[in-house]
Image (cartoon, rainbow, N blue to C red; front, side):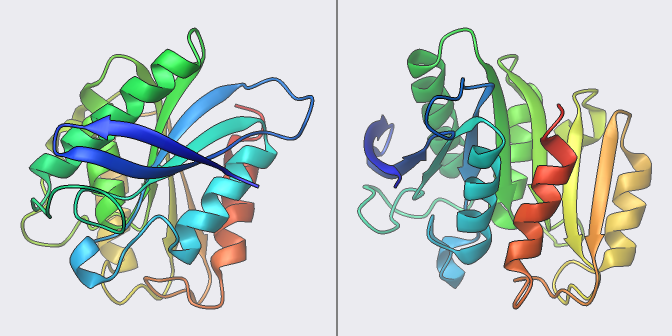
Length: 210
């Protein structure tokens, strides 16, 4: 069972859950996992976020998923990205203090992938970037930090994504510096309906030996 966790962001309290690795296992990395667009119902309980967090915990990570400002029990209100990046930095601060000396990873799904990738790319504490269905072709989302980052980058994308088409993802992926890896899940749409377990399995395969 995840641990209910309190952390403070610049806009106030952030509601969070912390999943740990199997009992008796050492923590190999501490991961912040960001959720999809709040204005479209995204929360830390979104199925992809849940499955992704559980998968990373199974391979030895401590995974913090949290509600952005204005979502659930988190204080503040939606800020279209800038404030949410502050929230993610607060979550990284929390993990850095709780797991000193451990690698920090930044992960997210959809809007949360943009927040995690762009914030993690410029934070020297973050060593791995993980994006699930990042909105690389949507107007208003700037991935310039990610496109310059030489940190290891791992992606999971739905082959039938109706919001972030796979051809746009391949174009974006081709522009990224190494190291990088991409897993495409057959027939999966943007929300991975019916395929959320496969998202977790893909993350395990990508990162179990990292």
